[in-house]
Length: 199
Image (cartoon, rainbow, N blue to C red):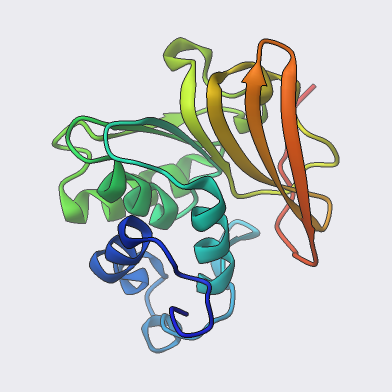
């Protein structure tokens, strides 16, 4: 992925090397952990393919010491990568709406000690509404596709903050320039499980 230009920045490359996808795939799928495909993790959800995660992380550009929201944490792989980058002075808030996946994700992420250290916190909630209690965020990563950009997530982004999320079949990059000023950039050609927001 480095050779093909998907992994570029030192902090993302280092986190990918330290956080093994193997720790986040279901039992029986260990031999497929290094293959560049999405894999099922149960409950109709998937762990994204490495190339897609690398692309999203490079767009997001997470940094040490930041407060980061991870929406649709699933089995915890992106939460662990973000926790590795955020470090002890940073914080990652992981949201998952399926209780069983949340428990699995929390357990997987704590293989690296991030939950015990307080770097990663998990909450069972509807990700489309964000997590107002800890807002605003320096970075927001969403790993499930919505039909449009959820307004609560835009509002919970710091001025100067960045968000990367799937919308329909595109990955969208958003940067908050001012109170009501957002820069948006679309990268088409991706597939994700849907982001479900209860009315």
